[in-house]
Image (cartoon, rainbow, N blue to C red):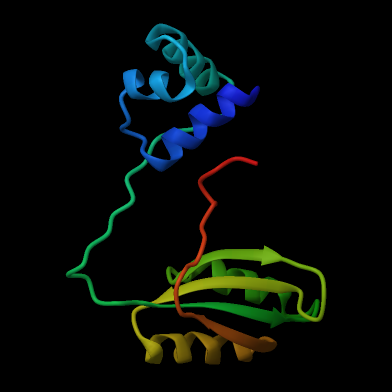
Amino acid sequence: MDELDHKIVQLLAENARMPVKDIAQHVSLTSPAVSSRIHRLEQEGVIAGYTVVLHRPDTPARVEALISVLVDATTRADFLSLVDEEPQVLQCYRVTGSYNFMVKVSCTDIDALEHLLTRMQKLGSTNTQIILNTQLDRSLLLD
């Protein structure tokens, strides 16, 4: 990927419905050249798909948190089963440091978060940070 490809991907990540004509203006290429680059990026798997991010102001607020978890080898399989089967778990990372897993959750309310923490604490120790807001999210952008 060259610099123009990165710029095209960034524009699409910000607005996947941006017309090719507008992208072409931003990167100083013709529309057919941009279409060709987008097609190549799709074929190479750089662009794996397009999605819609919903924002529903009428939806009740959720409690999101990062949970650091320390489990030993004897409870690791049970812990991984718990996170795999729990729909409130968004992501689970194996990490280095004082804890061996970092789990991002989105719970319906604080009681649901407490219930999930209680289940996790039966398998190991936890440390929880509640996410107040997102200051920066580059998860959809490439390096």
